[in-house]
Length: 529
Ligand code: HEM
Picture 1: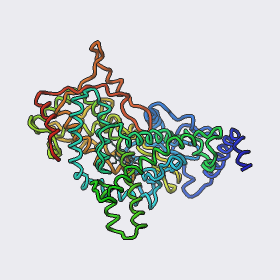
Picture 2: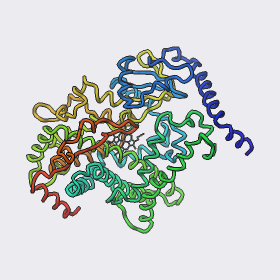
Picture 3: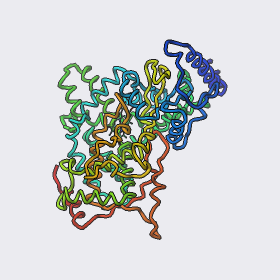
Picture 4: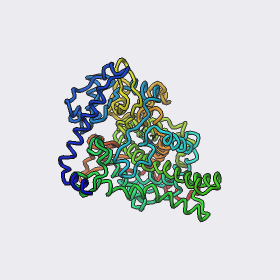
């Protein structure tokens, strides 16, 4: 106890010393040579002798700074960060060569102290490349694979229709209503819970948990990541702001994972069905095992595996949906073209559904362009290597973090001319079909290799039905101020900096296309599902 107090009182000295000592030991380890270690590291900005490239990291719209580095140094840019050799991957070829073709070497993740302290260490998206990760990923995939997700179409159609009904009442509620739509879809699919408001208690907890996560994931923000063995220090110690942050948010993360799961489990205990992924897993556990301990273990696995669905799927799909609304408001010409297609395929007497999917290439092109234009995860989630490797004559040391600049690849003018413009037509042939020669942007925007987003099929379907239903019912135009001046949509399309990105604002208004459209929207409230 005396030692704890002594160290705590002198923490302003202990912390920098511990970090410096850590850096020196790390540098020493790095200098040890092995077979491939005689190869040069990929080029990159010149590092400081002790702090490496820490102070070179671009903070505002970093993807642009990283693209400039790629232009200067090439496909792989080496960054010397504390305890963490890092390579920025700037081209599609290098990204696929490493993270897809050699995915057995590049599928690890950097687990962090903050993940553990803030109770995110159950989330398999942040787990290392271990047996536990494999087990959870496999279980998740069984419920979100392309052959399975069509089961969720009725939930998606129903929520897209409920969305247009709310937009009729609240035509400027673009941001809130699209958020509610994707939250409701994920919660219904995963837990069988009906969400009707973003003020729902669960949603408020989950949003707080995600807010905490966004702080915890700012690279280099917490010194504790460089000296994890100091994570025992109490929160009252000066300099231990990471502990305070963890204490502030941890309980929200716990509630986000536990509450919906316990709701379904309690219902199952009382013989009440809540048809959903979690309900079917609980049922399976109870049918497979008679031993309560084994049942419990399987149920806990299900809780943790599926706890990730809201955390990983809500903000991401929402940001892509916001990109669609803004983009289609800017590109009025393509909006008219998609509506003409909807008029001819769906007609005036019904709303679109998944049966129309193949016949609506314009709506599908809009989804593709929304995924490309303002990429939600500009750097995917970084991967980590598990062995020394060689690529194009360069050493990639074991333990290197690979950060793919997905934004840079999606904005490569050679693949996507005029990349800053929202142009769904780029994905169509002259005769209006999807053009297989243009690279599908979702090969970048959902990440890479064995870690590629397993929720992408659900997300793509949710976006498609929202796009089709919206454009069948509404013209989407720029919001005007009281003097009639339209909002600056290009300013709104500036992407926010952060681990997750999206447009700065969505100043758009929904105007019903016709009386017939209004009737269709109202009538959809009487549909039985
Ligand atoms: C537009 C929507 C979405 C985008 C842009 C997106 C993007 C991503 C990206 C870039 C990754 C990291 C891939 C990598 O490491 O290379 C990822 C991982 C993940 N996503 Fe998504 N995602 C979206 C929607 C969803 C949805 C709806 C779900 C769940 C239903 C989901 C579940 C996950 C999970 C569980 C992981 C972790 C995979 C792992 O580490 O093995 N995502 N996503």
